[in-house]
Image (cartoon, rainbow, N blue to C red):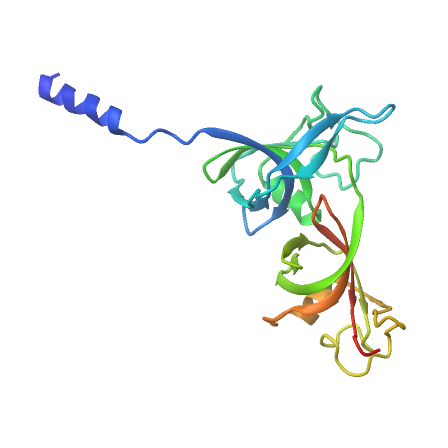
Length: 240
């Protein structure tokens, strides 16, 4: 090789940008568009309760910011004994660290996320997930608060400034006469003495009531704090 050409090659290699390092995070993943998930890094502490499968206790990290990752092509491991089980049926397939061992195709990440939030350990580089492993969560404590509610998309709410995911299991209690009515439409015939809705409706009704509104509504929400998952939403009528 010509000396000048060889020198140019060496200089090119030296000046080439270094590949992004592989990073690892623990947290709760939610679907965020085709082939993508969103997750906020959390601290994870391993625990092995007596007579129960290994799991991790998650806690929020102060100042941690949400990350959006492309998971197409990622290695995926589930805690269940088969890829498409919706429930454990009392059986788990875990390694010594408490992570899922059942290998599944990357497309199954989207299938699993469509069912609800996934507690996962993710290895990623840049904006792309390389490996996604499920684990069992330790804490399912819920909170109930009043605050301002807004719809972000078909499975995400903004409540008091925090994102909460939800799925078809959510219950929506209305003050209105019908489930498919607009928010606070008509007389509050189904409000209790505290102005809270008491007519049981569906997640689809919640989505329909909030869709298209740019402003927020007063609501009472019960949610899993660690998972960031809304369980119950109640309309609030202030003058009931």
